[in-house]
Image (cartoon, rainbow, N blue to C red; front, side, top):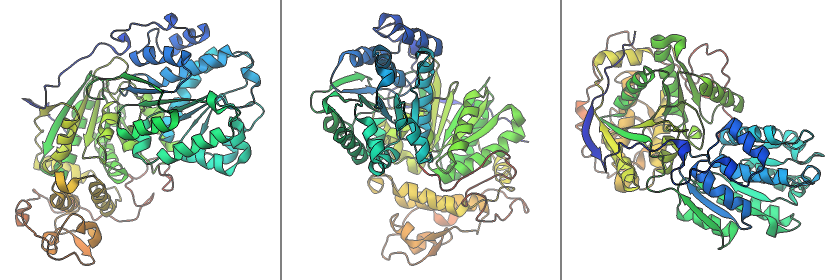
Length: 580
């Protein structure tokens, strides 16, 4: 039985400026105090918003709604994550639907909203649909439809090409561009499109969707009766040169810029903390102990973010075993990542949203604009390709007037990532790491004995994640990061069991044959001439006490594409071909 760890001690030291801050309530809208009935929105929208959200507008809503109701130009908005951006653009758009007497007969889609992920598209559609269903006329036949991956073409065409065109289409860029280029009748259904909204614009730019977005707008204008009537609105939690360049290309030089953000791009009512560990294995153990402690709080809800899909699978199975043993059915564990079918992703999101106490183990797919009420803590393990991911992950807590906590768990060799975040204005309170006893290590490893796992794939995926981080050779210690991955494998699989890795995957970390000895089984020949120097006395690794029989050889190539899966999970179905 797992025992509850002692509460963490807080060390009176900070990385950057002291970070313990608490902002006014989410709906107080400091400096505005604008009520929805003080706007020029249709009375039905005012009533609907009051029922489904609040009487008071957030700051971004109070600033953006009046602008969108009056401007004929585009709008670029910078607003912190978790501040109500969906209704900031959604309410003015719905207002146009109610104000136009001929709206029900129009032979064109009115609005297109672009989201970076299917999950965020589903969430946006649901949020807008709540207001539209309450405020729409009784004889309304136009709805808010989806255009995302895994949906059948006929299912997408039904709303867009049907007798009653979609009032709004919420889409991901790849699928929308595919439909526009492959179906001429589909493309002509946007001949009088009025609004093109890009949500999470910084994310879309970072993931090289910029050209797809430009191509989509080009197709819209080619088929438009009057392209000058098309208004573009962009929302972004961060503002970099790529986002501004996209805004100029889509809106020209005369767009309106609204900045509802200052300092770090996260809400001020989230306290950020940092725990530093000596190894990846210790990071996994620390994250697990933190999770147990936070769950013990009244109705605790925690999201654990992992570096990639494989590590998400692994930690999900680890947490599932431990939480089941400690809490039983009082705290469920769910997972969210790009290898799940959309049905499984939707089910897990709904169940976690509705849970009073629970855990969501997620890859980055759950970080972008997702709204999970009641999350009081976010735990982040490891580094990300882009520091903007940290901002979005922190934004999953401290929402809708509540306070929250974000804890980053980094090894000593990953601290370059914390320095980058510090340079961008993030502030961390330093936490003392909990004690990881040999008994706890044994319990943690023992929890995985019944999971048929492919640790080798996880190690390869970790190397790939490290290798994709920009400027890692300049800011970090690539060799130490790579060797730590090998040590992680031996900690879970037993000393002497080495992961099999291609030489080319180690060459970019400047790992020599001497470095790899006793750490990796290398397939191929490593480059010669590298300096093998100093990785914490490679010959002196201590893997802790281990009892004979505590370790069981894992079999490989299981269930859903070699990922981790606990036996008999019942209603969870997995699809290895569904990737974001």
